[in-house]
Amino acid sequence: MIEKLNGTTETVDFMLATTVRMYRNVTAEDFPLHWHIPGEIICPIENTYDVVIAGQALTLMPRDVLIIGSSELHSIKAPAQGQRYILNFSTAFFEQFQELSHFFATLHPFKLLRYEDAPDFNNQLFTLLIRMENEYFGQAMYRDCEIASQMLHFFTMIGRHFHQQEQQQTLSCPKQQEHQERFTELCNYISTHCTENLSLEELANEAGFSKYHFARLFKEMTGTTCHNFLLGRRILYAKSLLVDFSLPITEVAMRSGFNSLATFNRIFKSQIGCTPSEFRKLGSGHTLAQ
Image (cartoon, rainbow, N blue to C red; front, side, top):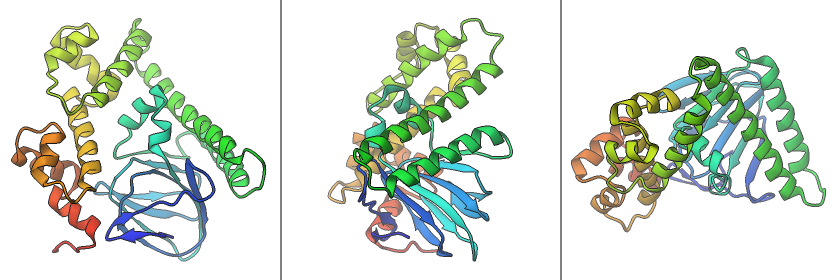
């Protein structure tokens, strides 16, 4: 259930642990369009679960694992009967780890690990979720520390899983590992400096490549263009500013690295599905006109 909802803005109360809010959800309650600063993990236990995120309709099967990025608008439709794990996690805490900061940077709007694609791997993730549940609702000493440790293990497994997939796809490149490490550092650099006027030439020099070689490698390493990655980080930062209703939309655009309000509105709508003003109205409790 959503405990604190103002418009479509959910406030997550980390009651039992400082890094995770965990539910074993068994209700047939639908969740309306909403968003929250913490990330979210959904894993059906019994029966399916329907999620709409970033305009995509997903039907989750038992032991599928869906990871939703921070501040992503999504809605959920539950079946009449079923069970599923729902976890909200503090991205601010886990982004302290450099490798996870890169993982979260490439997370938006979501990552979906289908059980049918890798049953053994998803079974390992599911087992870890069971352990987290036992720890979360138990009474053991140092419970908070153990839960944070298990979440780190959870994300580490997934990060390595995706990294192994990337390696298998590019084994023909002998410098793959070196490139991967270099581009991980570069993604962290972009995330930190995304509001600044970063040029392709500057980033290429930072990585030690020519502009054209850099553009090709960035797409190969991250699955998206450098330009789109930078815009994604700026939009993510803008969404965090839009929570402050005292800031004019124009100031949010400028602070987020956009040189014009028109450009900001256009890119925001193309990525989020609504304008910045509409996104703010959703958070204030107003209903958008259909």
